[in-house]
Image 1 (cartoon, helix red, strand yellow):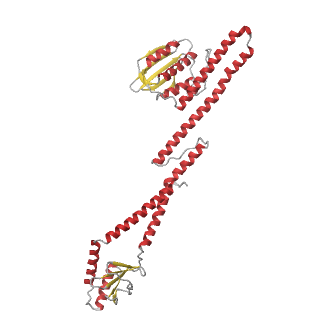
Image 2: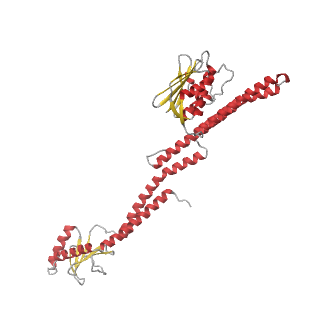
Length: 411
């Protein structure tokens, strides 16, 4: 059987309180039986016996009792050694039937206290208008108050955990918008913040996968349809031409599947390779040579994944080559102590301002190229994912003639 956490805290508190009371009672009993309390009681008995001399007349004792009682605001009754009443400051207080020869004795029947004086007489003390609670009743009352306070405190401590559990259950049942309320700055608040962060990350991954699958299903239809039509219309005298078209469509499908897999792995964070020292200018010159790009800048080294950075440069160069009009694509590499900057520019038609962020979304196409191979809209999305994998980002930068994409990478 599972117990609520607040009940466990509550019972632990009550158990600790009971142990404290028991240990306190034991310590009090032990100390009360020591020499110092006994000496104090003996001293009190001696002082009171001297203050109420036994040879004094009854009237004199009456006056002394009234004066003493008025000073300390109590009622007093004095009895002889054999239990006979001598005098009282007010109403006569009854002498207990059972009398002990040590210390203050509590009369539970009348709620009075009795002290045996040094000369053998008995003094009965009562506080008018006040009630001396029995020790057990006082302890029970204290435990009741503390138990009620402990229950409220334990319930308050765990109610946030119960709310967090409800949000976790809702998230597990498919409500991806479920979030926990963050209150306070303790461990429970930290747990709620981590749950919210994890839930948000999972929601983003699922949305990205849905978007990629939706875009992929649309993009796969075109080459598959072309392949199906080519097979149906194939003629013996046009086998070479049909074969060339099918190979082009298969290559397009292969590239699309490759980019889809890479995008999914980057979203899931499954590409985790040890970073190595990379010279960005040398890497840009090597990749740019395949596209006849103009490479310039300074030698800048960073810690990164060479394979992913090659893919980043290749996607930017393919994008620039697709839309370049008259001049080759240019690459420049610069940096400082904290970041490295790669800028890839072309003299294409540029991108309208409202679309300059949308172009980094998967399958979004802002411009139609004039080249033979169109784009499925994953290239720039992968560039941003790779840049952020290296603690950087990519942005579109407006140029005087054409377009520029600026990548910043942390060193």
